[in-house]
Length: 524
Image (cartoon, rainbow, N blue to C red; front, top):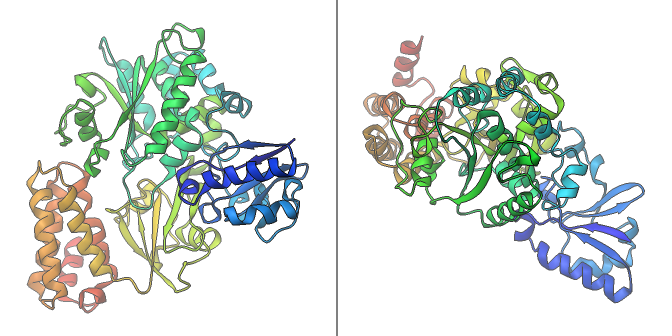
């Protein structure tokens, strides 16, 4: 019996994967051909979706961008045996976009049925949890610190230090909270994990509970991800039946329960303390720190808060060891990061590589240039509040410290590409407008600063390019960076200042504008 794979993640579903799966099943039945249809996760090669794969002795043969109208012709060409067809892209594992990656966290996605526990275990699942159950908690925290794993949500705080803090806190109840409120533009790695390999996230959260002494976990998923929520809830139910969750995790003395919480639809709830407020049933408003959530988090109790990719990276670290994971990357940026290519890009999708790869390599070797065919002009890295990087900065290694040195952030690894028709002044004005819309309103620099920012940029774009006006914008940005309670207001100036610094002509400014001289002199 031939096994045929049709993906079930959101990107494929949006392109008709359900109807395609039904058409393949019906056509096989009509022809009397025995097939087993598996609804796998996405390989992350999103420009090829729906990507249908057929298991053959040669390997899994892929057929890209398949539509219902292609099904009969595919069967005519003998695609159940890997036959030639215009949609055929060959052995999927040999596609350069995939073959050149270093997939650690995403090693399983697209290979397995996301809800099959047997598939998960057959591909190395649970090895990390079993080792964690046999390891002293203090030793486990030190191993995580040694691995170099830092928070993949943007702040890049060492995960092991956060775990060690929660483990050492004295409390009757501790929590593990996964921040899956993936709201940054151009990001989808969290969604791919939840829809294509949910047990990896579940295992990572159980390990976190075992190591820190937490017994309850919540996955806070953005409300715009209904398929992720449904997949997680189904996977958690099966994990509970299999004995992973409950009063005795894998027949051990450890207890852990896990629940899915639907997000409140607010961008600012991606900030950890606003998320905690939302989880507690309150309005999502940022909390002042201290105390930090590791000591007083959910319901005032010690809480580990990590994002999806951080927790999903934990199982392989415990399964293969800290040294294995630390061997990838550079400097203080260890391991791999799933870079997400989006925007005006020919081959959009997920690329997992070790830290140190350059933006130019990602755009050219993987992305294949712009979808429009025009020259790429700028890339926004790190979400809607990330810096716009000009071509002169595309050869800097993707490393937390290297990017911080130029006033940029890697963030969640989202890359949004813009070609030479983009107006960076317009995009900078939108960044301020976005902040004004999404601000929780608690602090004045963010709430008022973003509104004034929209107005000042509008005046500059309307022709008032006086030194006074440009300096006012820079002073406003400085106030927001220095005075905002959280990254919402603190990072909104990043896209604004980078656009102003690198693309002054879009504001109607000369490259040697007096305000720029004053700012550069002050910085020096």
